Image (cartoon, rainbow, N blue to C red; front, side):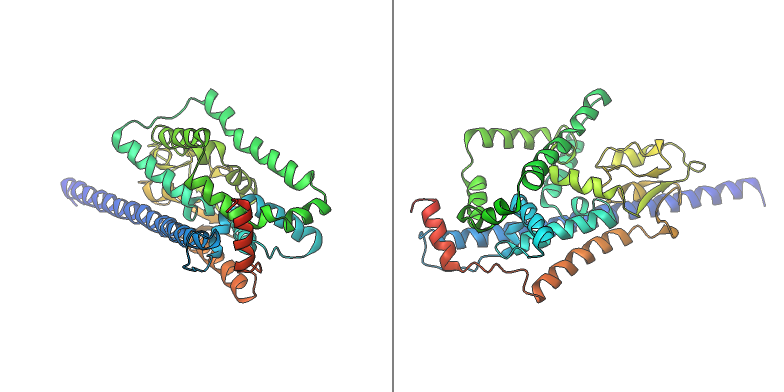
Length: 348
């Protein structure tokens, strides 16, 4: 076969592979954005419904709207205390049962499917993702040097250690039971709502700082400050799902590192075992070399990258369905009791 024909065929083959890679990249990125956006807007809808319930509960409206249980996902302290109570007594937290369900689902996902909760479900992760994409378009996004990045990475683990010590280690069972029954815990959802609606000057300033800096430093809150993500990252170290790199076929183009939301130095590893991996699989989708980056488990070296998000979402909704059908999703606190607590808490 003439050499020019061979060259033309090779060029066409490379071009087709490039188009396939670009389509796969768009599909992966679009899928994650759509899934994250779905959870994000569902949280906004649930927050609005809870706001209407709060207006009724605080006596500011006569319109009763049922309290959406999913708002308990924004009560991590109550969920953590509820988890300790569950482990010590075997009793499910029926004050904020949905919060405990969401926490257990996130922990299970972290243990088996990396930090998939962060990469595919968390609404804060979606907001950070949008800020990152905007920063890229404005060309103002930059990476911190290692001597700053590494110490900052420890902050979320220090915050996690503080909460674990105060709420898990240093709180005996009698105090756990008192916290569980306390009006403050029962009205924690309203306190959280006021945190968003009427923040103090300090809280507003810190929030504004975190929002603005996310346009310049990729996923600043998630990467450096989120204790929830720190906990899931520790569990993810034991996850059987890992991204693997074939060092022999790698061309060191670093497209994977540029696309990685967690800023992982993938080309320096053969297996991505770091606690920072959020299981987004975007590194696999942008790799121009076929099967250089793959998703694998111990009993199978390669599985489709789409398997991870499907399992993440499947496990999350399975936990929700089990809790819903077994009566562990809706709070046992009557709306009238909530109304009395809100009135006393806000002196109405």
